[in-house]
Amino acid sequence: MSEQTISMSEHVYRSLKQDILTGDLPPGARLIVTDIARRFAISQAPVREALERLKQETLIVGVPNKGSVVSTITAKEIKDIFVLREIIEGFAVRESMPLLTAADYRTLELLIEEMDRASREHEPFRILELDMDFHEFFYLKCGNQAIQELWDRLRTKVMRFMAISNRHHTTEKLAEWHLKLLEALRSGDAAVAEQAFIEHMHAYKNISIDE
Image (cartoon, one colour):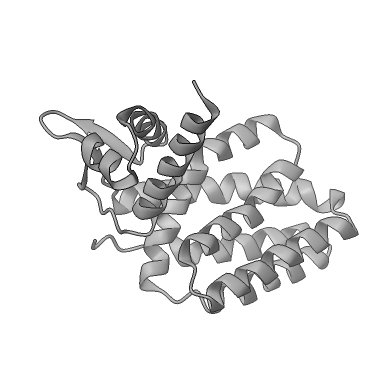
């Protein structure tokens, strides 16, 4: 397989993933290999590779007589994922706090600054990525391999749910909310920090599915 083929497959994958997460490809939308290949002016092989990756992330599913379609989601799925996220993220934050260095805080500050810039420049997919990067920092920092692997499986679903929420609520204060999380971390009180993160997640748990 050539490097060019791999590169094009990655490009198609990221483009389709962005379309799904931002709602340009809504639940139930069909993804036809020949149409996608024509859109990107490429052969079908990298398209099939990209679709396989999206299937692995459960963003699309195979449906008899329809082929690949964007998967549906329910309010219960969102609630269940966020209940689990509260548990594991609370743990990750508590475990990470004693390990945070000045450089770590600066990394988090830079993510928030980029988040604010993306919000002002109306870049919804970039906002999603930065938001996930901020929270992922703690899953990696806590040093628990099982938690990291669980987050790897949850990340795309969480991104999708956040994308739905962001279509219904403004992201103007997203950077400000994350600055408050940073303040809670700097308090040195693990219970305060954990509660701040949980309250932050509560704002997204009861998302209404009306796409």
